[in-house]
Length: 193
Image (cartoon, rainbow, N blue to C red; front, side, top):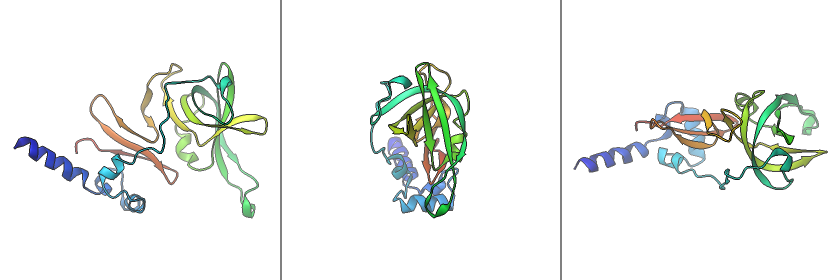
């Protein structure tokens, strides 16, 4: 009898709308509903499009154009730069970082969501970077790569709550659903429901 009541409580909590989560207001709930995520269960089962095996790390100097890669690098420079040549004569800003290790350096660029990314990507921070390597003029670059901020140069665990596009459960049982939507980083604490 006790198991059934707990099971019923969990199911009821997961069937609730995302607006019950801390940090989700009416606007965000509306955006989620347009993307057919009407319950907390829908958010939890919004699975990634692909699986990246981040256990295989390459050095920055060994990055190959046209391949998806994961590497650890230190942020050498990071700042907003102006964009030119957009249709209609409008400029704009993009966030750009140069990261590297002992073997070389590579450019990371974000055309959208730079404000959120700039909080994670700071000079001398260590990042775990995953993305498609492209060539722009004479250098390699990654556009909108997935990043995790690391505590140090060793390929260790990410710094707490600085992971994008993930479900995090820490040792204390706190569960966070984190991701990006419309250029904003969203994190919802779903512990205790």
